[in-house]
Length: 168
Image (cartoon, rainbow, N blue to C red; front, side, top):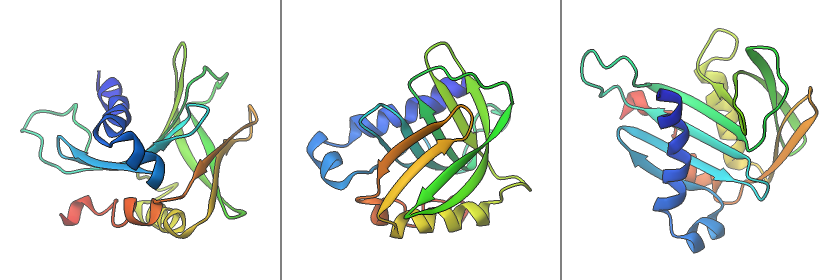
């Protein structure tokens, strides 16, 4: 249930931004139920979203996700056996591998980063800052070979301080 709610956020981002504005700026942004988000969907239907959820859930509501997280989803089922795989973010030719948890469903594959010792929030903040200043982005997997291009038009404003939810 939580995964469905979290994956619905990119759809909400798309619905809350007028189509012309989203196309012109590239990235859609918003705030919904305590979560600030910025994301976009490429021409092939792959989605990249950066989220920061405030810790505002009622006590005992453990199903609500808080803190920083990043989702990369593909509109197709991939054959991935591992529970976590490195996802490579290449910005202007410089690659950064990020360990992401895998969820394979019938018609989609979702990859999810949350803070860990393997890739900390500070490391993700540095990557997001690179996205803000970059010109070209591809996100991909080594096996199976998958590469998805994304625009960085509008990322400067959309991603500014996005992972600072603890400071809001």
